[in-house]
Length: 145
Image 1 (cartoon, rainbow, N blue to C red):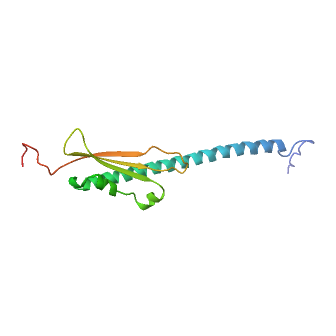
Image 2: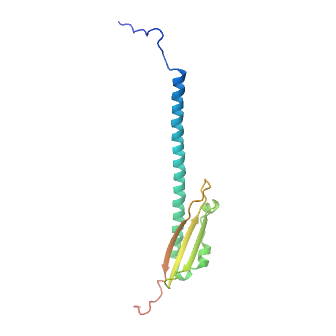
Image 3: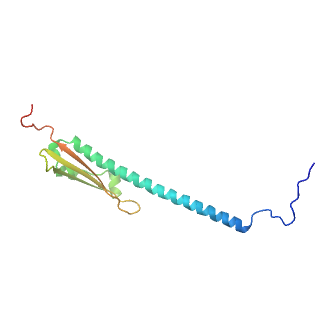
């Protein structure tokens, strides 16, 4: 049976305090960078989710306008449009306008604009969707009945 070789006198049997300190410093730096990337990713995800929600809310207003009879599309109809209560409590704002289209008669322009406040406080650009709605029940002069 062989005996393990004994280490020579004066040989080191572990890490020095300096080596451990440097390794911990590198580990701390790497963990800090990973945490910063993670936090930035969460912020971007939140911003994207807010923008998508704003787009869906504006699209819902245009769908509501599409379901409304053309004669009822008016500034009064626009003033009645509201955000769901959950978004209203967060400070989001909805602006809806109904205007006659200047270039064509029997055509109305409905604009839905959603503004929101980001958690970081930076004001993101509003989401604005526009729909053009024609009077489908109107008779065209010279057209077929």
